[in-house]
Length: 596
Image 1 (tube, rainbow, N blue to C red):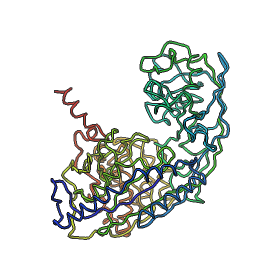
Image 2: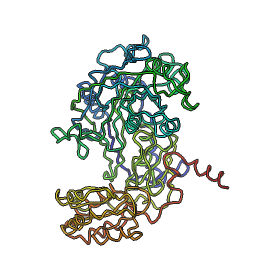
Image 3: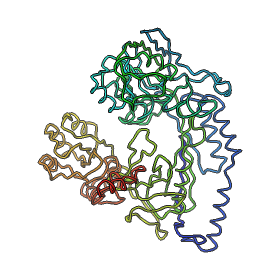
């Protein structure tokens, strides 16, 4: 991952018509336009082709020496481009590699799945040595046998359909097709329903000849093409499964593999539709609903059986090095204002998947009217425009959906389309050049964000004191949930000087501690409500407040309950949960038509 840190410049927005630029004198506007024209003229298709060839010259999967060499190449390029500083950060992360992959159709006929992609004559890169075989990283090792059940896309709604048909996957091996969700959802839901293994196939209806010409003539997946990728349960927590609460620096303490919560619980392998066909054509039972039918030349049945499969998966669960490249461009004025832009250094995205993000973020930094910390990310999945989310009210809400960032409890600050920044709200902070920005204090004391629910044991509250935590924003799951077992340790924590504040795990809504008796009881234990502040924002703000006032609890509370950067709002917009949340502005028009 490359992160480009771009300074917010003090230039005022150019929201009007040319030739004037608001905030510029005629002379400075001329210089600005000349600079922009020079920058726009810099990109070169020939140079991009050269970079592309370097980055795709050889396999360089994560954790290999080839990948680290490419990080060095990236760093050298950024230095040559004139970045003020470039740094490489090394981490050591759990990166499993397949040792044994075997899937055999045992009945009603015998077929050994190929589990391989043959090289394409028109593409010499497919003949290179060192390419990893198709596999789904972070799937459990196992040796399982069972009847097969076809589960469509393998999402929760599909299991509702199976239940209505009287079909259970308990003790079975499921076969799901790619699409309908991120791939990691499929084995997760299958395991929750008792399946012992999961095969994920590409279906030509979604990614193959039904859509158009396949490789090498077209872009669609051929008969033996396989989609690889991780199936880690990232909604639980992202990153290295063995370091859930800390960066994976060299020598970091790791939890045992059997305690890692994000590893998939059943063996899982991706397969081509060429390998899926012999299995699917031998499934019995009633024909599946029309929405479940793919593009293969068969009648799709759910099973179970009579197709029966034996599946073996074993991986090398090694810890391997990776390198992040960080490049910084410092602005000539007010360099403390930052816009962060990222791109992915992987074999399928050899240059950058962040062009629109970068363009829109730069337009915001150079000319936008808003002077706040914001996240600039895709709006709709069509990439037609970007949204600017207030940094204290934004969260990534989906592990893989393209427009995953959402403003919570409010609507986004602004829209960026064709480099034009259009505010969507009126309460943003404008640019100012009449004062400097200072941030007093540092970040004080260690802490934790426990989740309060009716099932949390009292030991959690005791751990707050035992581990020496002083800042504890509590993420509460419901207003009326009562758990008196945790009251004594909360009371001891308050007496020990722990700063405790209540937030909501639900993310939308307000704490409202006076509504139920349990809330009033918690108030008496010294827990302070924080309206609709997000738990992670409360954690960071509390650390800063303790850095400013390390020995003054009353001053800390005043800071925490005062809105500084939009972290608390007076109310939620009535339509904010739906409108302008990742590209669905059409919902307003739809509701207007339905309810008129």
